[in-house]
Length: 240
Image 1 (cartoon, helix red, strand yellow):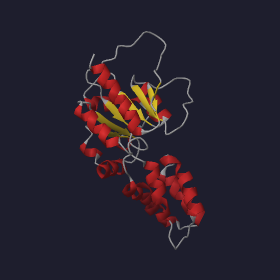
Image 2 (cartoon, one colour):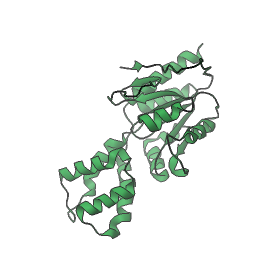
Image 3 (cartoon, helix red, strand yellow):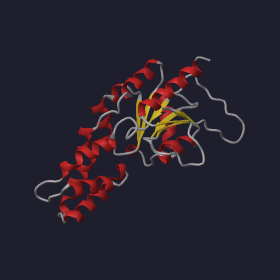
Image 4 (cartoon, helix red, strand yellow):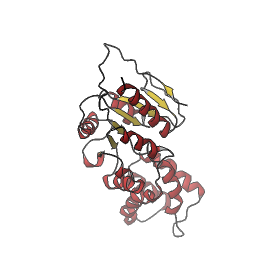
């Protein structure tokens, strides 16, 4: 069920231009099930040479921290845990970066919602943190590259979400200087970061409780629910 939580900020009411409302989109755990892919891939990392059991798989998934642990650091953690040769480091980093991509899929209902938004004329821009090659491989594997207008990947810059600059680049890529929507699952990187640039925000909660003193514009548990709610909002406001 969608839960509308309107963002009531202090100060005078803002004028919001709904004429061509771009939609900025996080990628991992918003459009694609990144955590599910990593969890499904993780057992493949362990082999007969250095062992590993279900407890080690669970450890790796926890250590991965939804992808936020730097791959260099995670590789060093693996080397220490399994007493591997230091020379395995670079190969481990590559495995951690790219092998789980083969397991990446869109969340249910996401593609149809994105296509419906494109049919409405909504520019879709993916704004994602991460390694540039890795994120582009995900876009290609899922077919998102054929749906979205453009991408802004932190690996191509010296800054990342929640830095306001990455959202401004995305807005410019959409060709729209006014208000935009931002959809994401990460409270700080996606929602707080976009909010500081004046975006309307839609949080994919995955069943989590909102804990901040301020509210996003809307909240829903599943990605397709959030996208549908954003689509309805855009439809309603462009019809006025």
